Amino acid sequence: MRLLGRAGPAELTMRNVAAELQVSPRALYNYVSDRDDLLREMLATCQADKPEPRLDPSRWRESLRAYCRDLRSWYRAHPGMLALAHAENLTHLATPGLMAADDALVGFLLAIGLPPREGYP
Image 1 (cartoon, rainbow, N blue to C red):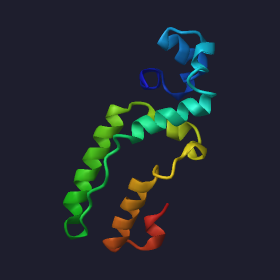
Image 2 (image 1 turned 180 degrees about the vertical axis):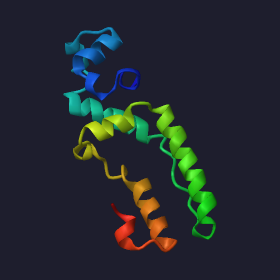
Image 3 (image 1 turned 180 degrees about the horizontal axis):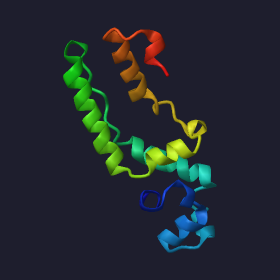
Image 4 (image 1 turned 120 degrees about the vertical axis):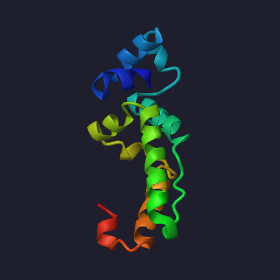
């Protein structure tokens, strides 16, 4: 995670991760099977503390602002993850709960009257 935050997604190679951890690249394969497995573990680590939306349609402005502040803090705690998501297609690494917060947000937007075609990009 430090390497990703410092150097960006292009530098997130098995060789560079091994150098960051001061081990041989081969040693990483005792813990992950390949780069996708490494990315899957990184996603799981980040998702573990992703804020759950506490969105109240009757107080939509305040609750949406609070959730956006929570998300901003979460992204700051995991520098590089947003750039990684933009640089690479990570959908094949998704777990069932990965999109739960996003789905809750879309449900909230629909509940406050946003037309369905506007709720999903």
